[in-house]
Length: 240
Ligand SMILES: NC(=O)c1ccc[n+]([C@@H]2O[C@H](COP(=O)([O-])OP(=O)(O)OC[C@H]3O[C@@H](n4cnc5c(N)ncnc54)[C@H](O)[C@@H]3O)[C@@H](O)[C@H]2O)c1
Image 1 (cartoon, helix red, strand yellow):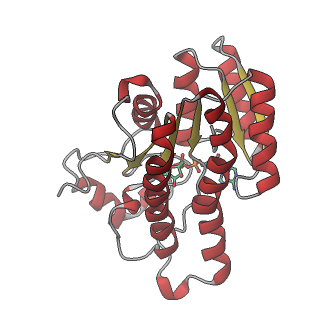
Image 2 (cartoon, protein in one colour):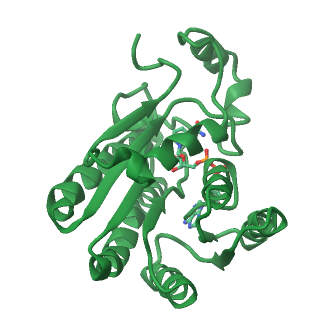
């Protein structure tokens, strides 16, 4: 479970633990991932906390290796860690911002999947759940790097599903709309963004726990016929 120190990732880690999973929580923020680990422990769950950067192949290897060393196998990979570009306009998106967003949001998903899939192939079964975004489906005027990265996550989801479903690994993504987390709390103060949320059919922002339930569905056998699919969880934002 990457990006488990905050927001959607933390909510997924807690719900999976509640459902009986042994959860390896990883994040590049060591302090926050320890907090998530403590929350799991306090609730009686089993966990492993690891600090690592999802865009660094050595860290990715260490995260997966230590997970398998501790728990003996890997059933589920949640590629959730991500960063936002604040809807930066295209012409203000410099190389540094582009590279940061793409390396964490897109390349990171590939690196982790490439390292985790061989572990799942050993048992002929696995589920990968990618946190994409409605920015993987539509654009919003600004945020070209984030939009490209999330469209890429959709592409990785489909490509890996096509390649590995025959070998027992289902790969799916969910697409959150506006969810209240550290990533978005300032953004939701913006009057324009508030109006956009008010215009959605559900008239509110979503909670991380609502995303966790979508991730749980895709990770579990409840979604046994879903692969290469996208579960849109956006309060209807992209329906209108
Ligand atoms: N919040 C929303 O409205 C929303 C909407 C659509 C998609 N998403 C996606 O959901 C995912 C989770 O975002 P969130 O809203 O919970 O944000 P968040 O900022 O609360 O959590 C993101 C977590 O990822 C970690 N992280 C960032 N870069 C990392 C790296 N290089 N290596 C390891 N960990 C790293 C951060 O430390 C943080 O704990 C992201 O992929 C985001 O793009 C969020």
